[in-house]
Amino acid sequence: MKKTFFKILGGLIIAIVVSQYNVIVYADEISNLKDEKSSNAGQIKEAEDKKEQVSQEKSETLQQVEEIQTQISDYENQINELDTKISDLNNQISDAENQINQKQEDYDKQQELLEKRLVATYEAGETSFLDVLLSSQSLTDLISNYYLISEIAEADTNLMKKLEDEKKQIENAKTTLETSKKELDSSKAEKQSMTVQLESAKAEKNTYVAQLSSQEQELQSQIDELEEANKAIDAEIKQKQAEMQRKLEEYKKQQANSSSGSSSGGSSSSGGTSTGGGPVSNSGFIYPVPSAYTRITTRMYYSSGQYHGAVDFGSAGINGQPVYAVADGIVYTAKALTTSYGNYVIILHDNGLYTLYAHGQAGSIRVSEGQRVTQGQQIMNVGSTGNSTGPHLHFEVRTSPGLYANRVNPENYLP
Image (tube, rainbow, N blue to C red; front, side, top):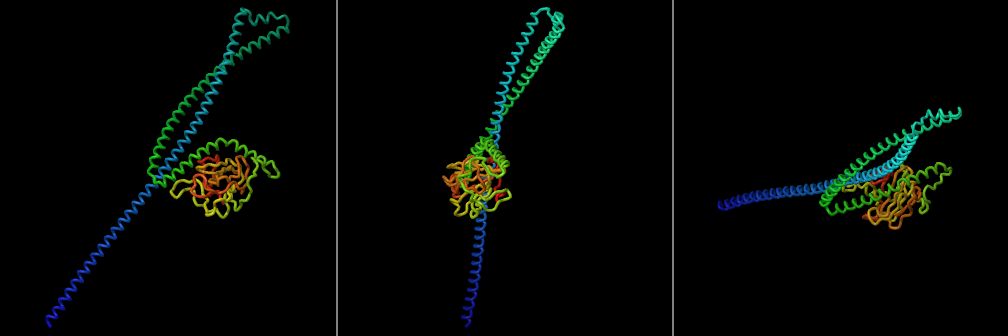
């Protein structure tokens, strides 16, 4: 009995010890698993931090590229302004040189005339004005001789005064010319310095662009291409500025003088029908697309943070939908490109604002440069031409003078 009892007791003790050992082992394993889980969580957090850091660095790189691009644009604008200034100074110098040559020629002629008068007076010897007066045969002859002598004296005096004035004008013109030449040299030196800074900024930008991801590089390439296209558009706008403003003023005058309110400010507005409608904003604009497709898919900034400067209308099914003039105006330009904006139209509106419509379907443009269009008139169809990843309407609003730098948020002008 006792042996049996001790066997049972020993078995219980062994069972308890084994059980406690297993608990300890399990506890250790749980602890190890918890430690491993904690370690994994730490690694995940570290990976997320690294991912966030990489994302932030990319964002900062993109931001740096954008800042440098802004700097490049500033340099280019300053160089363009200097080019204009240099051209104006060259014209001023040319005009000044022509004026100096003309004045010098006039001065030489007058000087020659005066010298001949002096020689003639010298050769006349002792004959004086008094001799002429005393030799008069009558009172009438005396008065006549007196006025003759007075006229000669006054002419001589005026001639000498004119010569003196012309001499001063020539000296002043020469001084102005020298000042213009110095300013020209200074402007050329400033342009040279600005050009060096521009090239340096472009090289710096290329360094940062090389650090971007392939997707970001593609986006940057699109932005660069768009900016290059806009430089060409800006040049075209500047060239046509006076002509289009004249057309707009002519139209406004015709409207003011017309009791019926009819218009013929540019070419005929045929080629499209006023099918657009919908609400009108406080700025007098309607939507550039039908009401069922007014959802904006991209606003003034891309998701990457890059400046877009426009809004995109890209609802499903928008491909082929009509694009409307948001207000009355004159077609500034209508072109079909294979890059950047693709098929695009720019309109100068009666309120002085400019609107740009881009990526229209190939062959769908219904208006031409200089044509008068009315609000709601179809100008083309939505497409995906140029630098576009899918059918949408790229829509910009620009303030005067309608350049790329004058882009403003279209949502402030739409209904």
